[in-house]
Image (cartoon, rainbow, N blue to C red; front, side):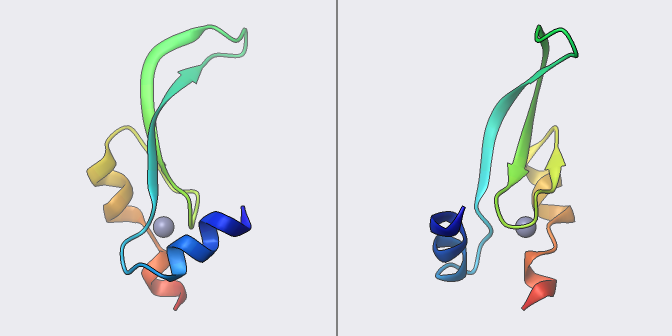
Length: 60
Ligand SMILES: [Zn+2]
């Protein structure tokens, strides 16, 4: 994940990836998608929620 961290440091905005499909314990898609911040691993169903809960800025 070093490449992502370097990319993150060079940008003021966090790197939010997604949408990722969510799977249940049987490996079946639940039909739900989520977004994740590559910097602090915050996950949420909406990209805006990830940005809101993102803590990358606090770590500086
Ligand atoms: Zn973050």
